[in-house]
Image (cartoon, rainbow, N blue to C red; front, side, top):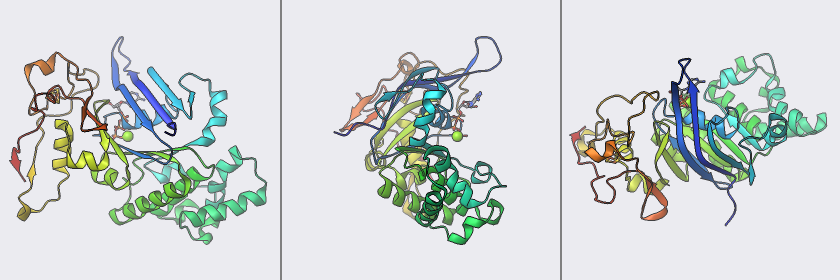
Length: 330
Ligand SMILES: Nc1ncnc2c1ncn2[C@@H]1O[C@H](COP(=O)(O)OP(=O)(O)OP(=O)(O)O)[C@@H](O)[C@H]1O
Ligand code: SF4
Ligand SMILES: [Mg+2]
């Protein structure tokens, strides 16, 4: 078996609130692995810790606890000076391409910038590679002389993707890369990312709050709730057999709205609790339709469901009570 590009063990991140001893528990004991060429989707509501995890694995934010192993090397605590040479192998694409790109630079220089920082190529080598990269992300060569204000959001995101692949990275973290784009453009960018991963064999961590988007690109998916992974599975398994009550409710909300199809939706009660004051036991219990008294006292551990790659953290899996009854019709 090939070794993973990224292994994350028991990652935690607590942000200070300014009040003594009071923290935002943004990430709470997350484990992840991503193999070369694999795309791992990470899905969860706003505030569930997705961006914090993405930033922590690239050491753009310091983890409070846990271990990050990148390409076989423990990078959890290495100083920034030692991180710098590794940065060419790990890149990030953000949600908002407008603020990710310097509006004063030409598109060609923006695409060439990571090569200048990391690859030590000559000017003509960089220029040739910039044209090649523009070609790979389907940007017309005349755009290379223009500025970001001349391009649409989708074209700018293509520039960001060209920058991300310019150094042939082993890992690309994509944090909601299609959320700020129109629906038709989203599909084009997802197609491009699928092409890129086949060409480059880079591992990808694809973050989104939208299960439908994650489904189109991911080999495996982890479902986050309040900074913890509640379920992880291959994409087809998650969609055909979601085991955690939270995943089941997310999936039912994702069903297409077709009144003739008699589709059932589970409607979650209540608001997501504050990460400053996490519920005891299972953190999902305040909204879980099948919670029992013991869910307040015991922290769920991962249970295997079928294949070795499918795990869910719910105390009711052994008794089958994790299945939500079809409660409400759309
Ligand atoms: N620098 C920070 N200081 C304090 N709290 C923070 C900081 N960054 C994030 N948080 C908090 O940590 C939690 C997780 O935030 P994060 O941005 O990782 O969530 P997210 O899943 O990416 O949300 P979204 O879908 O809205 O982007 C939130 O409660 C957020 O308010
Ligand atoms: S452990 Fe209890 S509260 Fe948590 S998801 Fe399972 S049934 Fe619901
Ligand atoms: Mg985010």
